[in-house]
Image (tube, rainbow, N blue to C red; front, top):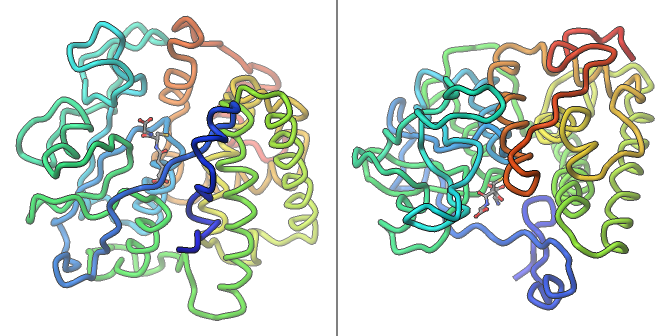
Length: 337
Ligand SMILES: N[C@@H](CCC(=O)N[C@@H](CS)C(=O)NCC(=O)O)C(=O)O
């Protein structure tokens, strides 16, 4: 089977690569589609399980927002930190815990919900999978409330199906973007961008931050900043979005990583060659996307900060950056770069 390198990582020798200290992302097991015979496109039928700190979930919450599907696809939000060693079910599990206290704010996080999609009021994302005999536990999950089944747990595919079925799913905004346009030239351009952005930016950030081998980190670091330079040059001709005048899937998939770069990844993923603020065209692009309807509400830097600086950072969350101004307020200021 060939791997789509814009969707998931090549699994060749994954065990040996992990043993050498490389972070290798696994493959998602549920690959059905809305529009298949078992999963008809209907408003109100589908549900998302997400964590707002997770960048793969962020793709999906962005697609739901820009396609105006908030009223027709319901959503539950997990707490940004996983369960601890003392949890009866074990550590490292996504948990629906609206009453859990965030160390950053000293209070529960208002976006966090109970699990309302299955009707069983489950506590852990893993239990949603276990009902179908699966050992996975990742978010995002697209769930069919009518059939009581997981449709898909691969964000690249979930955003494609929301885009393709937006109208039948009950999108209320006629002027919504087409994330994956049918024009073959544009589609090829988006595919090439997706491939490079997935490998070097979206997954590349994790390869830099979660690998324990200096050489693998250094290669991921170099590839990440090479792509930022490439995208800065691409945008320097004055285009609004990566492929021209229209916001597409390529922009959507770049956004979650760059949104996290200055406030989180620069420090947590050791991607400290430069800030996004050091790239004027990319900075203005980030602010432009952030200003699109629904985008600011589809993410949360509080959840990101709380989630990325968990136990491995002693549960103490760094408070910056504060200059030239706090984030995400900075994203309302394209003039800062
Ligand atoms: N292929 C998945 C990857 C999702 C993913 O890696 N999610 C992380 C959170 S950011 C997760 O839940 N991992 C499972 C785990 O850590 O146990 C997608 O893009 O949808």
